[in-house]
Length: 116
Length: 111
View (cartoon, chains in turn green, yellow):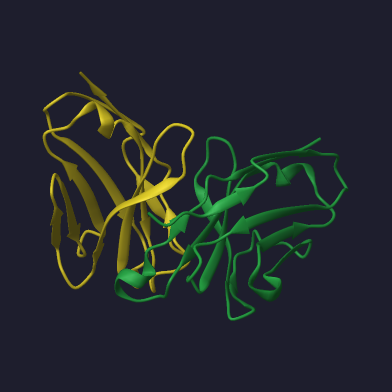
């Protein structure tokens, strides 16, 4: 079936550095999402993105976070600067639309971010 | 905002038995309730969903029940098989995006 890819699978960086997480969504999908899961806790919504714009973001989506999808390539989550509390697994997802079967979100395998 | 509680953190059943995973939600505006399965080392994989215009949906061995009055929904797996072993996540949404997830239920099917 359709697959969402995420690169890298694991990233270790020092606090204060910048990190970019990359997501390759399903090719014909139009809606893109990032979720964050701290070890042992629920997966939580960060942001969704459509037509080049952020549609909605949660309170977890701090000012240090940004998303973009330049020229239809990777959908990226950038954190600059990183903080210790950013350590988590970040899941990317995409969907074709919002209604009916189109709303089904396809998830990537996650990027484990460790901030030292 | 929406909060989803998943009541069973672990569930162990014998092969061939049924398994039930229960979730509750808080936001009456939620109308879309998908379930995802995550096998070890793999992505979340969609298994089934239900919308608030129905109270039951079945797909092969999976049935989802929705009780809007109680704000409760559940996943029923019949004739369980070892390959059903995984972590199952329930979720709720008001429009199909911005999913609010439960904490996950680790289902173990003993052969």
